[in-house]
Image (cartoon, rainbow, N blue to C red; front, side):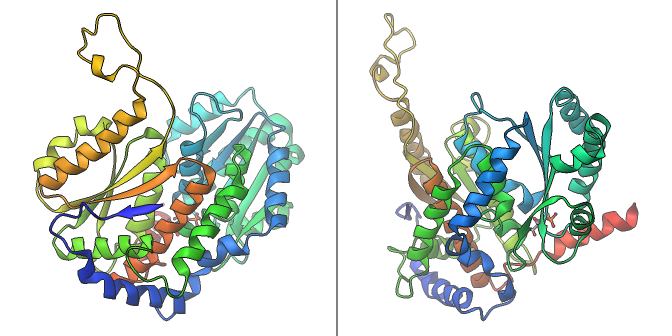
Length: 418
Ligand code: PA5
């Protein structure tokens, strides 16, 4: 993976590299706020073959049924969804996985329950705190459905719980009712938990190679965390964090993460939560937004080119993707004869280059994250790189990357109001 800052325009990421280095030291030495929540740093190393085998066994059991419903919100569902959407064809998935409990819309849940009414499905309810309202309400709905159709004992076998090991209602329910349970380590927060069973179990059920995903994360963690690896050229996370800080200081208070495939829409949403919730506090933080090009160039392109200059863009550029060839046409009446016989990916990558050049000329600092291809190993590396960059970036901005007092305030208000 490569972070290419050649397009940064007149912003100098070297101006902030020293601060980013200092923030990296804070992250690594545990001398900053929230340091007890840095367990995610070691997850790729800590995940054993035995852990992966146990996930694979459970995934196999789940796949004996007709579908899996994942109930979770925020850090408890976005990671799994990001990887599944990136790596499983939306038109040819061999095992259906549905997401629920990530909002409070009754119509959506009615439609999902209707869709599942002739299917025997499993539920994986995921909540680190075990007290979050959206998945808890959804759990009631799906348990009732399973209990009505299969009886309480069988329903109990179809519900799997992923939660924190200590407190929380979900933990109590799982213990009292003897439900199969996976643990979210106490020192790993929700949005940093994609490499725990929170993300890995649904991914394994989707048939993905979670071993390679963890390997990819481990390989890059060794590079990013190496003591002496503190130059922007050799450490993509450090480079990205320094670049963001330099842009922020120059008044670029918004960042758009852009991908050129709808397969990465959910990855961008996962990134948005990671950076938004980690940095947006104490009156600070870059506002994270996402776009899928070229689709959104036809809706947001004008703004990006010519709107208020308070934004930076980060492009995810996939080097190798599909070998679909643009066919020849006898008439060439569409004016595209020059593209006949060329791979469509070449046109898509030209769009990356074209958008970067245009927007940079329009005064938007641009960075490009290049990944060789979309596969489990590279996804693992990308997820870890973003997490590590986020830790550095938040510390460099002077905030605690690992708490979320604003989210807790919403949760408390909901409880009081209801
Ligand atoms: O990152 C976080 O901590 C949050 O976004 C949580 O993931 C989210 O609020 C869901 O919390 P929980 O997993 O406790 O249900």
